[in-house]
Image (cartoon, rainbow, N blue to C red; front, side):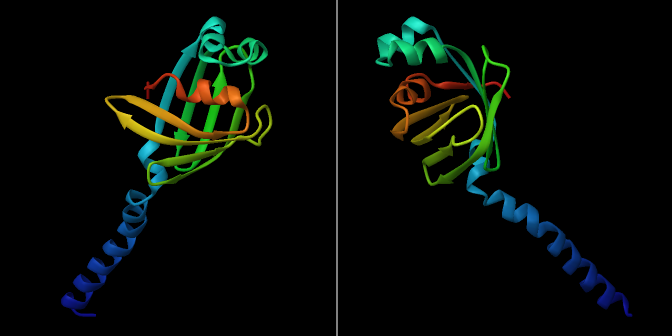
Length: 142
């Protein structure tokens, strides 16, 4: 094989090897990749409009890990985390919470600015999730 043919073949291989990285850059889920945290007291959740029962079960520190369409959310007062998938379509995100330790869905418009992820909840199976997910910004911690 000639030097030119080898050089052309080498260049073609480099392009092929780069394709997964190019595709990953276009992955809409990757825009949200990171670790985020939000905290509520029981009284805050009630004042925001959740039921007393919801507030009692859901106050504390929530940590949300997002990575390429997969999430993990853990509430500090419980040892188990919810692990599942999410989809991104433009500025809209849908979390499928129908997994062990959680239930329902949350659909929200999202905005990420200056290390804060904001959700404007459009639809949630549990009405309390509207306040929990959307009343405060989630601070990016990783």
